[in-house]
Length: 102
Image (cartoon, rainbow, N blue to C red):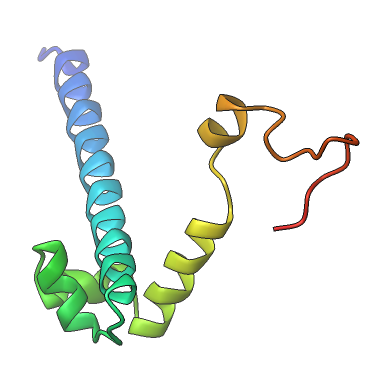
């Protein structure tokens, strides 16, 4: 009988690697879109893909349109991550203890 636990461990490791790669690719696309916007451009999804060093087909797998990508890139800039929130837990609060408006 074959030991399946070793095969199962390898499969889980590969899936984790794919998940991490997908996260990096998605982030690369968002970062590329943000960079191009910061340069004053109105990029196409193909231009964002080129800037992110991925194929246009890959970009469309992650985002159905340039509008969807840019909308998400905008939201990502406006919503702080947990790391940002906890790095300076009181940075969002004003001197009177209330939340400051951006």
